[in-house]
Image 1 (spheres, rainbow, N blue to C red):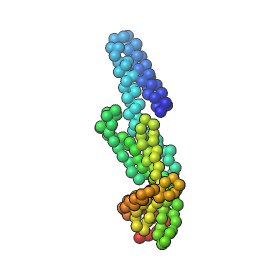
Image 2: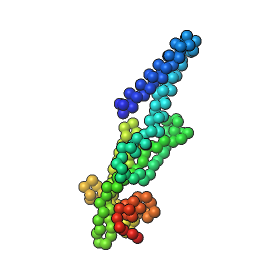
Image 3: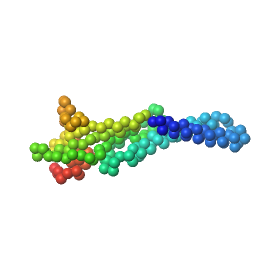
Length: 175
């Protein structure tokens, strides 16, 4: 976060300096308010740039085997440019580093579901799941691999990207 704050100040200083240069080149004929307006536009410009570039930057940090499952775009009052075209505010992915095993004739896949949120400090949440490919349902696990109590089984659509990736592509399992 400190680097983004520094980048905002530098962009404001640079465009404010450019406004000052324009005033001096014109022989002080341009109004003095150009300098703070240019600085403000530089700061807002960097904020808008970072807001839209955040998703691509985070994708570049993911491992090659990661699969993005869902992308969410939101507008924000403090980012007025997002009302014209909302930027990606969070996305979910799996890293495709899974454990596939069989128990009682049913194929089970243990995986980690990640959620990345764009906030003042980027937030990454992870959830551990056990997916039953035969029944197309999953249950959340704790970080030690135990089923959370009370156990809540969530149905998964068989045509969803999550199911297709984990049950069809990672194994020889077929319905």
